Image (cartoon, rainbow, N blue to C red):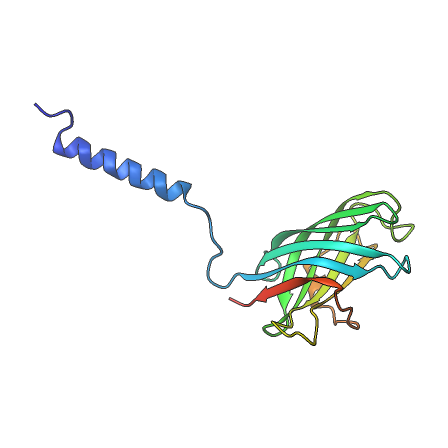
Length: 170
């Protein structure tokens, strides 16, 4: 006498296979662009100080998801945000926009608060030792921020002092 009949064993194996498939980590589907970075940039609003940054965005245009974190330890400013759009401009440049979710400490602009917009222009210069990656962040009032922000034109470059940016067009 067997513990499981052939039919029950097939059902059990099917249930186990489905459970493993559901537990597998989700990966980006085809066409999902990706931009991420971490490092330090000069804070234009507090000369002589810098922002530590960390961002991650994945998706296509207005279906992107991700996070932003800016910290200026000298001024006590901590900004967090959620990504709402990602637009690649070629294989190494990205426009990322979203909503500020929290500000702690002195805000870099007096009137910027949670719910307002952020806009990042990021450039990945590959493994170049002479040309650093760059990140240009903007924080401004626009309630509610929309995916149209990702159609903005880049204004200037701001080389990162330390860190690395990676942009992938999938």
